[in-house]
Length: 607
Image 1: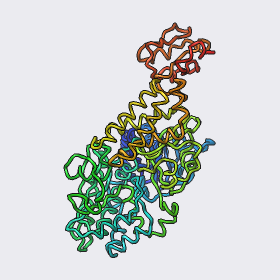
Image 2: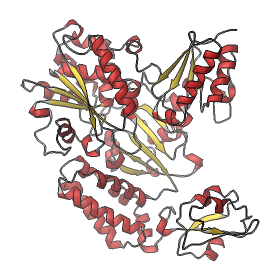
Image 3: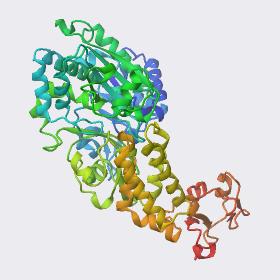
Image 4: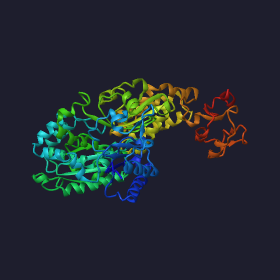
């Protein structure tokens, strides 16, 4: 029997795991064992491969054949056909829009074509639990190079690269290191901020799960540059796989002499601890994060002094996020000039985004700064799901803004997004279509920030709560034009007077939707209509008797049994009992059910 392979890489990112990756892996292993191939063909779980929509994913090497949407049965068939007989199983291949099967997806599919892998260079390629595989791809070479340089030379290289903080603020990384290096202190610290809390964001988690050594190496280089002896990775408890793999990587790094005393035979000593956060969004703010590490309640404090002057336990502290630190080894190894070949003059390098929402190809993407929103959404993302109309792109999570479709050709960099009232944030990007209500979107994000406010300052604690009350009033059909005016005034007050970044940016979703989608707010308060037919209080579900065939599908899925009618006879929805869950419209195959404004009678809607 001809063997054409010796490795099966399986994506073990969060999306693939939730789609059934473990059962696919077990099936591969059982089938290989059945044919006595377990010692010949390795099955390896890797980090996120990026194409979350296509999961579970496996790549068969040495050919590099990419299989998608796998099941345990598919795994058995691939072993029998591909591994034993050398025949590619076409039905599990990715298919181009014209229907052509694509075996080597990384070379031929737009989702991967426009990406530039710097931070995610090892994701989906190595076993994150094996330090040897990281080393085989030039891992820890940058640390060795840095230790042969003077600390100020390392800082100069990072400054010349133009690397800016990827956690959202975009502060120059080299400048931050330089400030910390100049401080005279008995102790200094380096902290990795892995408290990624934005809804829809999974960049940092994926990096920690798929390439933890890149972060460790980046932290160690930062520590050498500023003269720190101790580091902390602050990661939320909701990331158990990231914590597990990071723990394995730290142990391996110590065993190999990359952490601990006299690293690589030098007089430089540095070690890292994991600190697990309880999931408070406010702890993503650097001063609140430090308070949590110190064992205090995670609340922000007034700045200055800044952490580089007075951080953990009063000592100078550099805080960088996961993605920022993962860039560092690549820059030191390849040089600042190589890094600057990507991106723009003021925003060099690449950015990792979690592309989510109403887009065909959701997933983790790494692209050069300056790429346009159109390229991201339509070329990499494949366009809007179900071919609907693009309405807006929300960047920056609860702290970000909503960019309308008319700005689709905006380059994605720090300055361009800020001009539109949005921010880069940590990299969450949620695509919205014609069915999304922008008033409800603002309400959703504000509800999140109200819940996550630490309550320390009055503008954030009381102001965001009052803003949420106004938004809930508007989406329930009880709002007035005066409410819209008050909402805007409140938003600006909260933005200008809150203590920390959470409060200062919490109004952004409100202000950006008011700026670009005010007509939707006015429709809610003047006409008592939701143009997107999303807000439950402003819609009703009706059945057209001319189209209803009486199949009873809607009645069978209704959770409150408010749909009545005989088999093969038109059905009727009891409006008083309907909870507007939408289950009926999802199962109707005849287009007989529609959403209408309550102001429209059933008879008018049918007409």
